[in-house]
Image (cartoon, rainbow over all chains, first blue to last red; front, side):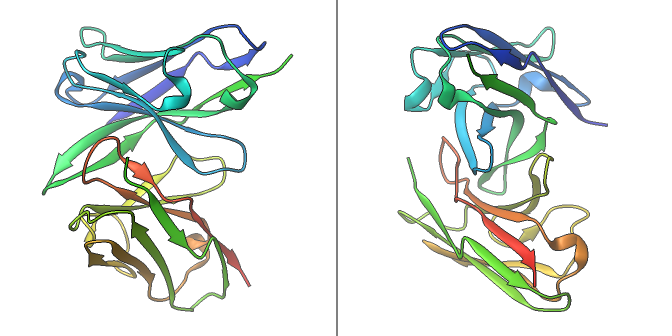
Length: 121
Length: 107
């Protein structure tokens, strides 16, 4: 069965760095665009970044541009999110998700369980 | 980016009720609208894609309609397990963007 398993979250001080990983199994990882979506405590879902299947095209929400880097290693079936210069407002549950384009629409049909990032002094 | 607006932000209903949640896009997105259900502490779960196609395993009491900028999610007869938060999401272009969510609570 398909599994997306995030790791790497934790408590970190403002200004420090953290790297999230999302290990994918049960699907042909290299064929799909992948997303990171976050959810601050008690808030809604927010797109953070996404990356093309080959890894050559990366996109970021404005609030993380220049601080976060999305990447992937298709040989390891793993998606990454390098988070630098973390701020309190980056505190959230971070989900990775597979984007599927089907019948003319993009949707996120497989999600990881989430990795909690807490930025606090 | 396309902005998505849901209403209401919260809703109280009883088991057996019919409920409707609406979602509006800031521009036309044809029928590229998806709905997710999220329960406390869990990842979102895809319910409906392409406005009205139920994801595998989703009960038929869920339905979706609309086109262009205005969409609805309807639950025909609420069950206990349906009390959750619902999000719409446009899949017309990247980045996919979400509505702010509708929290469905037990009355």
